[in-house]
Image (cartoon, rainbow, N blue to C red; front, side, top):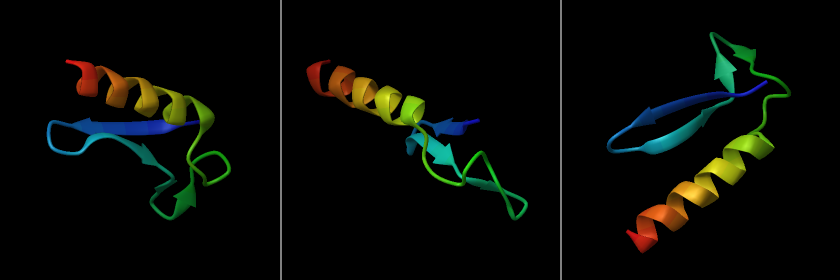
Length: 46
């Protein structure tokens, strides 16, 4: 499981805990890592 949050100033952020309970295994997930790499590459090449 993964939860993300986004904003115009913080871009994409992984949520690892909600109300003291871990999301999934409590670590940043592989899908978020891939999305962050793609987003950064797009932003750099824009």
